[in-house]
Image (cartoon, rainbow, N blue to C red):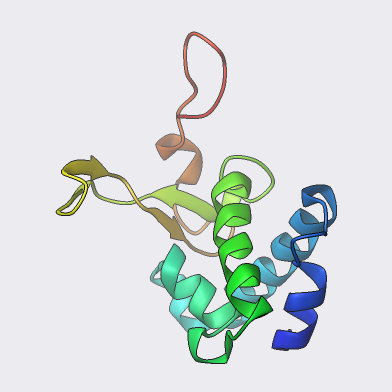
Length: 125
């Protein structure tokens, strides 16, 4: 998708229920057609393919941020078959450990085993 369309479909006034399906559709297309998806892509690499940072100016910065947020939400929902948790790593500036999302072809990795449910609320961990 070209930057102007990302800006239009993911602008600040666009509700999330309209933005999520667009991000999901474009993500599945990238994962299906990009050869790097077989090895797994980080969220940053995936967003760079979807909307390169060098093309993000003005509204594009907001659109890229919304892509990041949408991917984080969709990783445990409709894109759960394409996402799994990577190896834990320590963030130096926040002094905490995180497990980044790794994006891959649906079913390429055992994604369901790495996305656990919370025993208390039933939500995804």
